[in-house]
Image 1 (tube, rainbow, N blue to C red):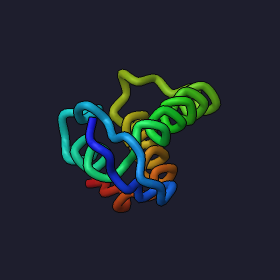
Image 2 (image 1 turned 60 degrees about the vertical axis):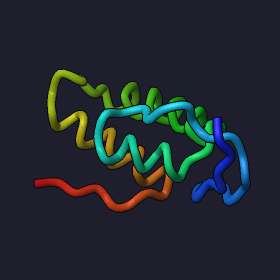
Image 3 (image 1 turned 135 degrees about the vertical axis):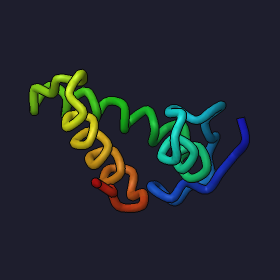
Image 4 (image 1 turned 120 degrees about the horizontal axis):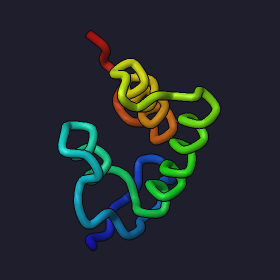
Length: 81
C-alpha cells in the first residue's frame, strides 16, 4: 500500500490496495482516502443501510448510499440523472 494524504482526515496514512468499486467513485476513493477513513466509512454505510432499511436490489437505494458515502468522505458531489 502506498501512503497518501487523505482528503477526509488530512493525515498521511496508508491508502487502499485497490479501488473498492469498479467505477469513478472507487477510483476517487483509492486516490484520495486512507484505509482508516475507508474502514470508518464502511461502518457508516452499514448504519445508513439499516437505518433507512435500504433494499440494495433497488437502484434508488444505491443512489442514497452513494450520496451518503460521498458526503461522509468529502468527495465530489453526487450526480443523479
